[in-house]
Length: 457
Image (cartoon, rainbow, N blue to C red; front, side, top):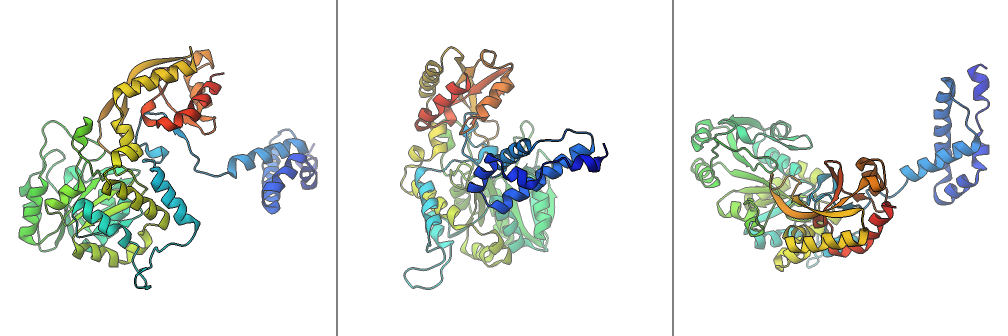
């Protein structure tokens, strides 16, 4: 039969609309959109028929339409259980918010806010005023602003201060941080000219000094937040760079990445640069993320001298990068935890990092007992992740699931766990599915454990 004759046997739109499952879709979704999806589905079947494929019935087309609607028209991103042991998992949204930060964002979304209104005067205010005093107290900076992420903060700083001028950076720090974020590319987009000095593994203060010209606008220091260079290495210290910069009237900008306000050594981890230390040592601008070790929403935070922060705030790019009211509300709530001295008890990432090995052992054995004979407890490691504290690990206890008791392979079992609601994201290592209690808060267990057990049936 010719293709045209076969096309005529495809079910009509009216016949598909008469199917019960389509009626149910139209009760939930806009009728025009459902009809458009039906047309799209018929068009796909037409292509298959052209190449000799079978002609579907109206019910079969309706089933495809219903499945497409359910998979494409739902709230997302959806909540998941992070049982990977990676605390700042970039693919899973990095730092989870505290209940107070979540509530603050929710309340800001429900109505109007004083986002850019000075309540005292009744006149227009600045959204940056909500964080300025908080960050000043926490870091002793003169001024601060927030944008939508740290890449934006770097771009804005260089565009505002070094457009058409030179920025000196160590060759070992002209790196790709992640997601295609490369320091040289950001510099070129900002209009600044990159002046690399030193070598990949060794850069001295003399290298910076020799590179200074009358066109030098900034000395940039970039923390290696997601990699390590070890062995025969040397880097110029912040103190050396600030002294050099002050001697020549050149500001030092420190991109520290993770935005950690706490002393990480108290958790058995390597030292992580703190923004307040960079301010104390004389950096005029310090840039960092809000959703890493700060434990807040996605944001890029700039702290430093009033002179330069105002220069960034007045730059045309600032408006295109400014933080939205939901993220700003969550950020303020997060900073207030530090002001109150309760961050290690309230912020999820610090609760996870600070969980004792004995508590993790007890929780892992409790999981194993609940799940049953298909689960066992093994020793393992958790990681910080998210471009923070590269190479640092924390000892943990893992729950290992026996895939062969349920499916044909560990990958099939991992898929079954991802198909729960909410999905459970674990990790597969050496043919075993592993779940790490460290990245699951204790209050989540009552919902998580029944889902694991159900997936093993």
